[in-house]
Image (cartoon, rainbow, N blue to C red; front, side, top):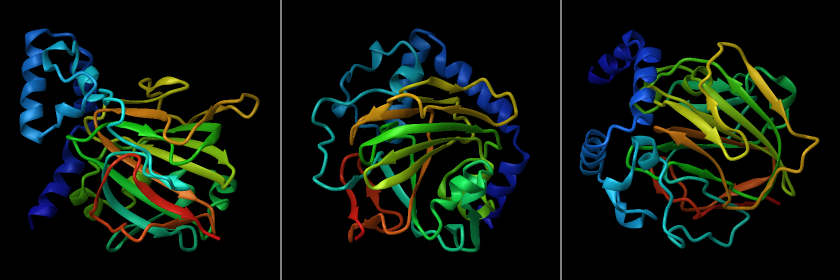
Length: 282
């Protein structure tokens, strides 16, 4: 009953307006007020500042500077594996893409084509492939890294809703990750193509990539695409590729016979960037 109420509120809330206001506050340099909010946030969510490159809460000029903080060197050692986890967070779901459908939660699936913004040719590359959906909670480190070395080919900004992406909403909103605003990043690697999808959410002020900077805002209300095939934008395994300026989810897509997930992976399990995700399948 409680979950139904929470989901119903998601439909009723002015999500765009709330996100706009949150984004403005997150970038504001409000001195003592900013420090007080950061200090409250650290206590409320149990953020581990000891592993931050800069653990001094009072030195962050804005909430976004704190939220996208870097870590101390060596805080996230990279496992010796073909594929490593790209973020800190929790495993929402993972497994096989079946007949072009991705499992979201019990009773809910969504199409690969919808997720990547309607590009059927792109989605076809992942037919019968595999996916992983990783949820970043407020306490987590919010930079996104490369699961394997790759060369950037395309970036697509897909407009959409801004539902929360927490587990309760994932269980209650059909097609959540293909409905929310998202940034689709397409790479090629020695293992084949792969996609990292950065999914926005309520209060997520914006998303940024290492090669572009802030992608949203602006939010023009139509699909935008950037192509990089004529450029050599290469990123090594573990290199930073993007960041969330306030929370959210990453969905990864891999082709058939590419990724075999590690035995330790299971839905709900906490993960850290750099740990083993899996090995080449075959």
